[in-house]
Length: 368
Image (tube, rainbow, N blue to C red):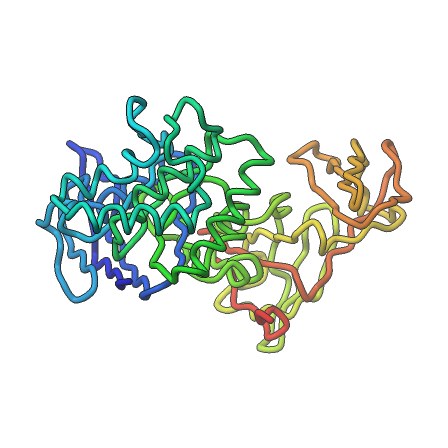
């Protein structure tokens, strides 16, 4: 195990800056997930840590050692790729042993490590097979085993489950989580799937356009997003957003007027915002209640999705802007075509200023 420290890390390709001043501390034994939309720089950041890309500027430490100029084989990292990258003409045993043979490891040590890794990953019965004889999940476990057999200080995963079907992804997520608990390895994991991030991570790093938007536990990011970008990216279904404006504020809270809803008293501190300042009100689907339409607070139900244990109700504002979502336990009394009023839970409403930054939140938002 080893810690990883990124200090003002930058990466430039030609005239394009891909990674900008990334500061990050990853503790020994942590499971850290890089998440963000396509093109945000998460895979590039992983490749910088692995040594597969050169660092333009900044410092990268693994443990106490600066590794900017070290080749990948000297960094003590093992990497699992999206494409598995298995040698088709080699058996499972030979694939897992290949990196050790390149490192001129003694044959006895190779056998010991491969067999120990195979036991952990339940691959003992498959060691004689070739990749074409394996399922997708088995191939992914072999790719993991090849990295683990080298006993790296850090395991790096680059979207390892994206080629698997939905049910197999769930199974592999559980296997990776159990593996981390058993080995206690430092893991850095890249995904665009925020469900993977929420279920696997000790700590999530949300990236946007090559910069870190927020770092925190899954609970912190879900309950206390610092920006509108994080609030909209983390959570499924996504957070609802409505235009709003500041009406009045004190140290105890503020009053805002939200489009289509009216005036709300909220526990957020207004900060430096004055009456009339434009804001965005955010509320998650489970923190939004429905009531019979009243006055200007009127939204049309355009679809009701029954998902077994819960129901998603999709609502359209009068102005026809982005649909809003209400989530509740099944069954639902609401029907398509009805007009309803929206009632946000004041203790779970988020406010964002014109730059997309969250206003200070009250103690009611504290993470449990």
